Amino acid sequence: MDYTTMKPVVYVAKPGLNYEDVYRTVFMMLDRLWIISKLRIEPRSRILVKPNLTIDKPWTTGATVCPYLVEAIVRWFQMKIDDCEVIVGEGSMLGVDTFKSFEVCGYLELADRLGIELVDLNRQPTVTVEVADGKVLKEIEVAKTVLESDFIVNVAKLKTHILTLVSLGMKNMKGILPYKGKKAIHFLGLEHGIVDLNSIVKPDLTFIDGLIGMEGFGPLVGEAIELGIIVAGFDVVSVDSIASYMMGVDPYEVLHIRYAGERGLGVLELDRVKVYGLDPSIVRRPFKLPPRSIAGDYPGVHLILGDPCSGCIGSIATALTIMKESAELKALIDMYGCLTVAIGPKARLDESKGLTVLCGRCLYRTNVDGIFIPGCPPQSYLIRDILRTKIGLPPIYVSEDVVREAEEFYR
Image (cartoon, rainbow, N blue to C red; front, side, top):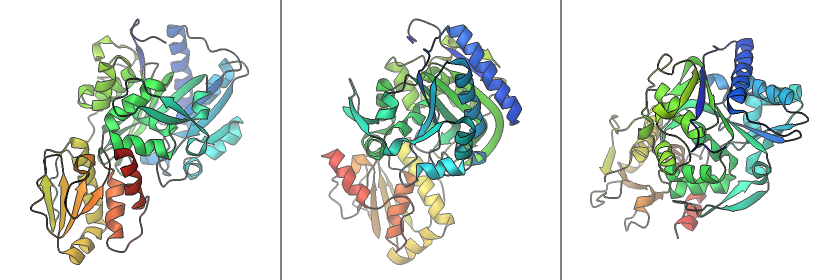
């Protein structure tokens, strides 16, 4: 569908959390969207439904997509598209088994009820796809299952993200990549990488699950908030713009949404989007956002800030906060006397004390005796896992091998 020649449509609804109300609302939204768009899907089409199940946490935490929202979507396609094949596919984050996420989030039972296949996109055969005009990616491996699908339904969450401010539809597409592709985007540049990915594999339809959202330290350990909201539309950029506005966030402040609009992947401007259902301003509820400054009290931590980006700040603040609450930070300070954390391309490292950590791609090859943590920006759980190993604790998600893997991308 060419979004440059038509006014994109976004549907906003608030069914609450009741199963029957969600089911009925999803059918109403899809019926209306199909009437408006006059879209036709051929019989016997293969339809991929891609929910956000990045981690093995129940949907009630706000981290993952509600299974009965997905059930309603699948049922609608099974009823409306003759002889279609619907599969549900996801590739959970590094260190998390996708089928464990399927199990914890209630998707094994859903698959049995609906007679559909669940697919771990992390472990599927891949196809290397060239990224024309990519900003950080020149090519990327994508799960073959995704490329062989005739229609992609992207089911994202309404939640904050410590690296990208929000995690919505465009960000959710990262789950179609195997582990190597996920690492490439995080190592080389997350915001531009998200846009590069969506430029080659763009969802045909995007739902945002705001039944229970997540604010604060999202996307994994934030606070769950009950909203009862669903947002849907064909243009993922417009859907993300409306959804971010509903979270109290200007879409221009979300770099990957802004970049996508500037690169012509969809419509960014709110006044150019036709909204059906509820007025977004009526259900707008400002979210508590991830930290954009390192304002916490971290005894024994020496920070060297060299004009860091907001993603680096959010990641460091999250890692230090979690380590402080778990007493890991105290153990680290007791062992080394001090922890020096340098972030930002202008960081001056002549003041380092104790154990020194260099965070982010912009400090790669810095001539300082310290621990390099890759990423653009680095992930908070990677920072924490590497520091855990320095006090004799095992990593929770990833090992230091990821640093060597990052260097392959940086050469």
